[in-house]
Amino acid sequence: MSLARIHDPLGNVIIRNIGDAGGPRSDWVADELNSLITWAKNSPRRIGFNFSTVGNVGTGLDTLHTFTLPAASLATNGDELECKFGGFAAVSANTKRLVFSVDGTQILNTSLLPFSTFGWWTSLRIARVTATTINAEINHAYGQVLVSAAPALLGAAAGGILVRHFDGQAVANLTSNGIVILVQGETDPAGTGASNDINQNYSSFFLTQQ
View 1 (cartoon, rainbow, N blue to C red):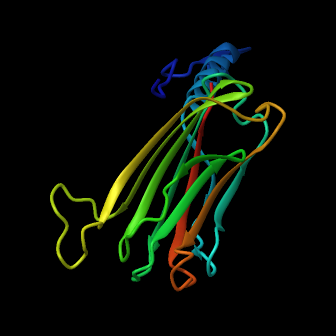
View 2 (tube, helix red, strand yellow):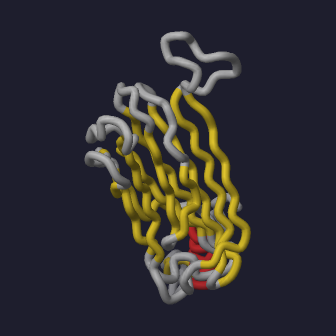
């Protein structure tokens, strides 16, 4: 719905003497406030962000960004959380992995991918189905995505797009529990194990409630 005035102009109540205005009608004020509240509840609002740069440390899976969604944020069936993540890869021959988890369940494990130089961008949407189940959809783009063969300078695996969908994924009771949204990264464990091979510098979280 769009935000619009219900009563325009917002009338005054005449009291005692002609011309003595007693303020807007209370029922009209209530109508305007109810309209504003309804509009605000059904509009996405940002509830968290993190723009710090965090990279992997040596070999092994490391935490990049993490966010705890407060209990009862997804209080009603149909409430939705949209998560936006982004980062970049170092210029190296090492393969790189990203793992995205919701409440301890992996939503996407990219596997070790041979990309460098370019960045990555991920959109994760979480919708409440019941108090203990969600639908989750994740779209992950990395490197340079091309419609034809990659330039020789970048090799054959310059980038790609990954999409996953989870239907009816079990979670802790959303009404009484916060859930953790976690992004992890690692570099090729068989390679040089360089730190900051895979980095994250963008997280933003938007909540839409009924």
